[in-house]
Image (tube, rainbow, N blue to C red; front, side, top):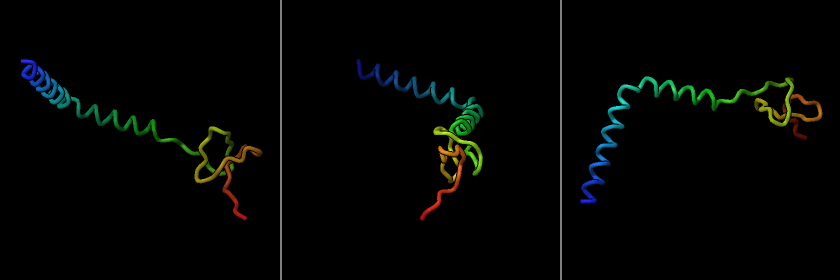
Length: 74
C-alpha cells in the first residue's frame, strides 16, 4: 500500500509540474535572461578609476594610482 501511495504522489507531482510549465514558458525565458544579465559583470576600461572590488577589462587595478592599467612584463 505504501509503494502505491508513493507512486501516486510522484505521478501527481510530475503531471502538476508539466501542466504548470506549459503556460509559463515565455516567463521562464524572460527570467533566464534577467538572471544572465545580473550575472554578467561590467568591466572598467584602461585609465578609469578602480579599487580592490573593481573588475578591470583584461587589465589589473594599480592600487597605488587607483587606475586600471595593462600589465607590463619585464
